[in-house]
Image (cartoon, helix red, strand yellow):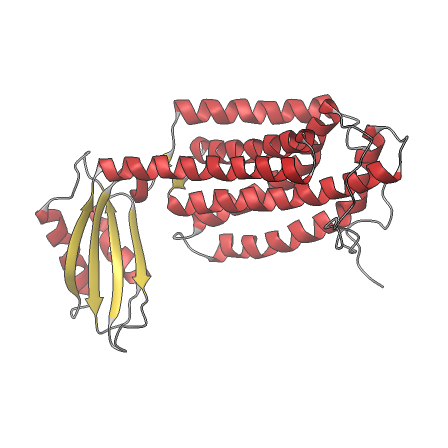
Length: 322
């Protein structure tokens, strides 16, 4: 006897309450935009600038002990990461300690650097500090713009890809869903003032890819069913296609969320922002594939005289039991 999260045959009407679902998405977008412009993002060291201290020791790096030693100094956002390199000796252990800019200054004062070094020496008397480097506001600003360009470039590439693979109506629906996912995820970071750094940008780009994959699976099945059912109404074709791929969607999203929730609970503070963005992004991405991308396709309509060959539909796993 097998556990089934989704029945073998479903006939759910995903567009029965279309005004409510679109209104909910619109409300979340408005709240996200207001939170972004009113509260702003809680930028991490990558975007605010700060000072990086490189440490080296013959003893193993204990990130937790390092953090506990520095915390009483009240320096704000502190990031500690161990560095691995095949060229290191067996007894060479390196870490990077990054401290956010203090009082709008480009770098922390020599006195503060000395306090940090003294605090770390209480944990590891053998520790040394080969270098101290500062990242100013100009470099941080360039990182912000690079991050924005990378997300916009990913969305633009998706627009072209879907347009070439399907029709322009599909492309508009897919891009609307991606903008919806990215904007709301950024809004949640602004609303709850979760630290926003380069790892969060990596999570956003991953969300774009994951949401696109889910949307393409649904759209592939829609294209197949449009050719199969020549006179069926578009709304019915969309409902049929989403129901047929629901098992695959639930299984894929569910198993991914299991791993992410474990990381969210047990992964620690260093990766929490990245994992939270991924977890929330997968939830909102699954939602948007059904209630945003397909809703836009329903509103725009599609031509029914398909002349292109079916090719590889890419839905070979759509009927996998969940």
